Image (cartoon, rainbow, N blue to C red):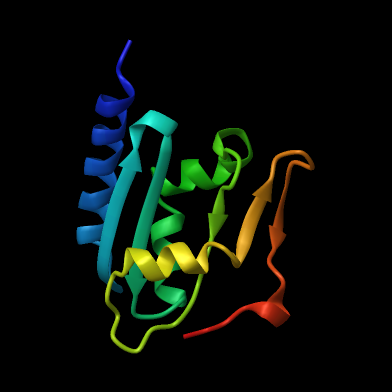
Length: 121
């Protein structure tokens, strides 16, 4: 059986190659906390529309289809606009405290965050 490290490394390599070859990607970052089986991706896109072709191809399409099965406690997405397009994990962590979308496993649904309290930077 493959270790979490090797599976993560394989998926990371596939996704990074895909991101390098996807039009509209400005930059990206991927990190993991193997001990707690948590993974994060951070992507900067030219526009929201440029994300669509990426999420329709594999493996992102599989992740979207299986999100309810794979998502753990705290799974969330944060979207915002940035003037400099930099990857800033500290800002991402703050944004994830009030996510755009989050997964509520107890209800098996994806919920929108409170739009009124969202800050777009």
